[in-house]
Image (cartoon, rainbow, N blue to C red; front, side, top):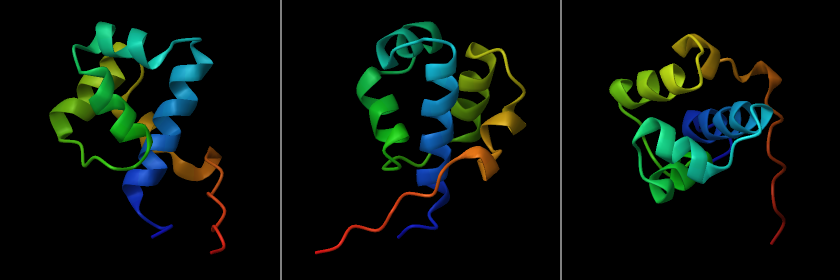
Length: 81
């Protein structure tokens, strides 16, 4: 499912995290969320609560709306089987 907002959110989160030069481990430590959970978020496998979206935005010092700006995220290519 390539239109899944969880995937776009995860790609956007990874983009913003890397822009700060942070590892997943650093974001986990700063936000209080588990690194394995963040990995699942970035892979589009987790459905975040509003509380966790706000927690991540606060940690990255961004308004939550920036995490939902998917226009700058490249759409993943479909894999052929």
